[in-house]
Length: 344
Image (cartoon, rainbow, N blue to C red; front, side, top):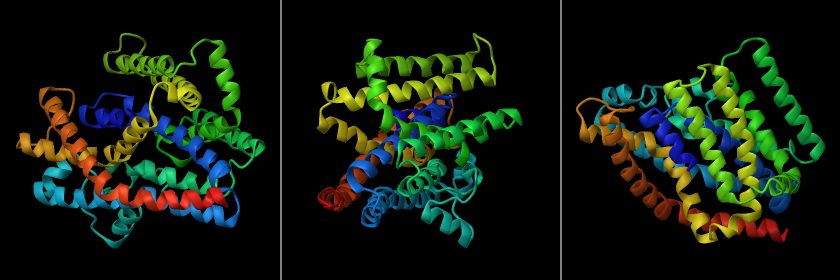
């Protein structure tokens, strides 16, 4: 769902929805990475090595396949068409740009500003990798350290308002992403307390929580698009903070009661599609636009909707191919690494 929200945000240009999704991704990553470090790998030297290797195998083989797909796509449609469709989607022009795109490390406090990116959303993967490393090094090793991390993250947000930094600094920067990541990590220590609260509120069902989560997104997205209520950046940001709260509730509910709604097989299947959809939707939109129209088309209009629907079909087919040709072969290696860590 989150990956599709990002796709809708980019190709149909529905406001805010992608921001909600990315922050939820960061929260989920903070929770999951902290959980596996505590429960699977451990903080010894061998555990950290296995954790790092597993993350590398999860992120890079599929990304490199998508990057190759990007190069082929840009070559087919022409660089001019590609740039007109998405201004940062063009071939690297020097060795530094090649290194950035091979490593998926866009070295800046706001990685969003570095271009080209063969997969445009990978600025957020730079952020993810940064915090993966921080978590491996122990930034969420104990409750006290994690609380300090959260406190510093909140302090940055307050400081950003005090000196009138724009929203990009609270969303697309390393410091901005620290808040959702740290709260996700803190959830590891307080998940039973959060579940007790939502259980008392009689909203512990994953379906109920997901409905609340989606309705929050829909309300503030509708306001951002049509302005029936007060139009203000602060209103938009208030909705995003509610999104953070509801994300914590969703993750907690799914952690304790997800098996009552989704089978493990179905859960794994939709999880497998998330990463390739996230990485390749811009490229599939580019190809869809090229097939349907002589000039690039996207946005909330008839042409944009047609491109989105064809791109959705293409991204599902391409993701299916990536999962079966790349990810399944890598997954067996990753599972062996996990098994060895668990035994250790």
